[in-house]
Length: 485
Image: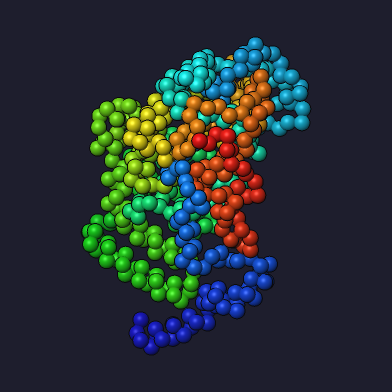
């Protein structure tokens, strides 16, 4: 393009609708456009502060990091933690009508039979906590854990329930829990993302939107890392481009972005600048942190890792390495916990036992490893699914498959470290594990408690978008103070 044509191009650019909309963000046009759209702030925040909060907690935190182990598909609490001998007595009996009247289930139709626990339970530790024989190694660390036995949710299908648990809303478009945390606190390590996601056994039903940034600046979305192959997709330099050339190109691109920001004042340009800089830093920092081969043999054996394999065990060890290097929030999703019993070996008997064998050793090792390194005190570990399982059999394909349907009224989550009581159980369910009778805890209460341990007031951690202040817990949530030290 010659000088004359370039001049014509620049002049015509100033007459485009895109240029008008950019300029009206900070001028009188913004006021007019905002009123036309019912007061909506189309571009949310438009300052440097849009990249995050102050980076300071609201009060002194008990935890600096979070490792959230989400068992996607919802494990059965009745085979793992919620011991119900009365349910065993009712095994094979027709379900009482009172449990079905006015209720909605995902798959149960007609009158199902009651299904007794398929595992056996014993008491462990000084806390005398009931744990099933499906989790023998985890049973050794129950004195480090608080169990919440009466958690409930509003959703009984996987994706909406996962969204509610991870974003505070059953619908898409809201920021994830990890995104809210990094928005409020930032990242302690400038060379690593503040929010990292690890997957095993495939992805959750809700997909990548579960760790999205929603209406927060996109710098707060989770960065998905892999334990096999390239740790982060599209991070490697192209052939013929070395690190010096890459650094020079990033600097030039960001200078252009800075000029664009000065003209347009679009906060997403700041996000773009941050992401280019972070991607360059991650090229050297991430491969080093993700290399579990550098761990001593006894540590690898403790977790049961297989180097080069995508597994829950590998991801638990990676989670420890990530928080050890300053990552604020690590989210693990382990898929395959949807035990309907719709086929041979897929129910809460053989199927759930097999799945528990994959996670028992690693999650026990994670707690032991964090404790022996002095990291459990300021690292909050959470384990759970998106809802629970019914005390009655689903049996949509016949009586021989022992599966349970989705259940929103009662399930178990456990927490450890980060200012949580040790060897403690909060809440109770009725004699068959159908409903909570004491200490009921809603999903929003779990979220409020996690933020609280990080020094964040869930009612004060807000972001203005489309004319209103949003928060993770919406207009709900209370901190479960009874489980806190």
